[in-house]
Image (cartoon, rainbow over all chains, first blue to last red):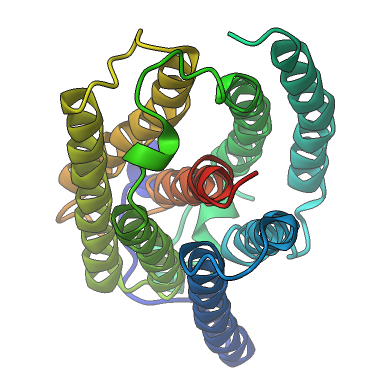
Length: 114
Length: 206
C-alpha cells in the first residue's frame, strides 16, 4: 500500500469535463488575482496621495481589505467550493472568536496610555 | 477507496483528497488555520491598543515607508498566485510545471522576507529598539510573528521540493503540497490585514 502511494502516475485521469472546469477555474483565479492587485493599489493610493479626508479613508481601506480577505479565502483557498463545509465551519468559528478578542484588547489596552 | 492503487488508471482529478490520509490532512490544516486566526487576532488587538504609546521614541509617521510595504505586498500576493497555479498543475499531473511554480513561490517569499529583514534592521538603526516603546514591542511582535510564519513556510515548501524533486506527483505527496499551499495563502491573508491595519491605517490618520 505505502509503496504504491509513492508511485508517480503516467497520465491524468481527468475527464474532458473536469479538464474544462479546471480551465475555467484557472481563469477565475487569475481574474481574482487581478482584482486583488487592483484593490491593493487603490488602498495604497488613497493613503499615499493624502487628498482624501481621513474620516473616509479609514473605513474605505478597511472595506477593501475585507473584500481582498474574502477573495483570498473563497477563491484562492477554495472555501466557495463544495465539500468545504467543515473548513467553512472551522474558519467561521475562528472569525467569531476573533472579533470579541480584538475589541476586548483594543478597549482594555486603550484605557491606560502606556 | 481501495487498498490498491492502480497508477495506470491515471492521477485522480483531486489527488490531494483521494486518500483518507489526504482528507485528514486537508481537514486538520483548516482546524489549524482557524486557530491561527485567533492567535493573530490577539496580536492585532495588542498592537491596536498600544500603537499610540511611542514613549518619546520614533513614531510610525517617521518610520513607515509606503513604497517598501507596497513592494512587499506585491511579492507576497504574486507568490500566492504562483502557489495556486502550482496546485492547478498538480491536478493536471504536470509535475514539472508544479515544481517550477512552487520554486517561484519560494523565490518571491524570499524577496518578501529579505525586505522585511531590511525594514527591521533599518528601524532598529534609526532608534526603534524592541523595548523602546509599547508601539515598538507590539509592532515587532505582530509583524515579526508574521515574518516567522513566512520563514517557516519557506522552509516547508523548500523541504517538500528537495524531498520530491525527481519523484513526480503521487497520492502520498499531493496532500503535502496542498497543505503547504493552504498555509501559504493564509500567510498572505494575514499580510492583507497587516498592510491595511498596521501601515495604511496608521499613516492614514486613524
